[in-house]
Image 1 (cartoon, rainbow, N blue to C red):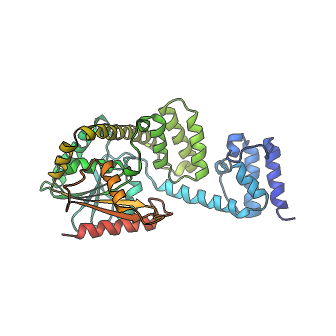
Image 2 (cartoon, helix red, strand yellow):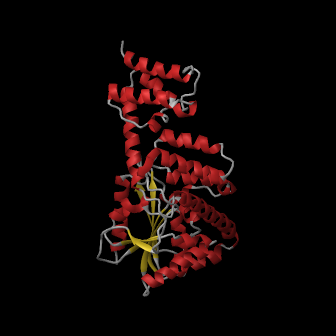
Image 3 (cartoon, rainbow, N blue to C red):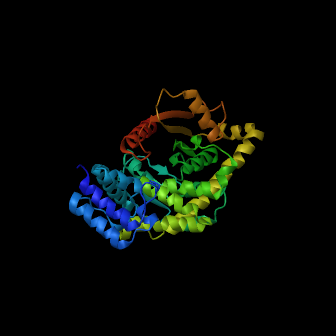
Length: 386
């Protein structure tokens, strides 16, 4: 009978856990149900001995009831895929250095000639999520770091002023080029209005986020942190973390739980010296930037002309790249309107200065290789123009 060997192994798990698989929710993990280490070791050894599936004890506890049911009926390849996914995700996470930098800036690629492109920090405050893109830029890429003593900066205006002053040191003649992604894009837009920026490039994510008061809730902002920091975690782990975090009473304990899960998943290979601080700092920045956007939404309705006038005085030019899933031909006008609303740009008056480009990101994550290559190509082409 097909699956007899699998059925026997899985049945031992049901007995060890003391559960009825027919009435147990498929999404629950073996760890959540309370699998003891002794039985986890037996399952781990059985998977490796019989199927050459190699996973850690912690990984065993992240296997779901649904996965065990599939395995029971002979779907061995799905368990093998899960093991491979874990291996890939762990390798990615262990390459990230969760260390807050001490230098004001750092090199993000190996190009040494040409005019630099300066990257503003993303939500996490470290550049791990942008390193693959930086490597494909045909100019020196310099990351403008987020430092510990910047935590005292209480507004986007103060943050933008800090980076504008830093650029006075790095590029005293002005006419420099900057790049921003997600909330880093807001810093770019702020600098464009006053700083001597030559060209700016932003990757737009904000136009997909509806502006409402819910965005200021702790749960919403913590979910945003999970999405960014935990993007390389297996989907079953992200679901489990969300369930665990939902039971925690406050932001500190929620983020501490995320830290614990990341450390348990990666083990000693995770470079996590400042992980706790990075998570809390990311949360504070998310709240600051979200508050700014909500305030600007209100102000924009009342002072639309004044805000538009400031943008019209800017000397720099800007390219806004929009990753987009091309299920069908995108409506260019609709996308443009959404982006202008997201960054509080005037409807008219920026002709010749404001450029839009959509990138097909269908079926790809933001950091996936093909999407990155398309973005890099657009950036390189834009910056090469005179």
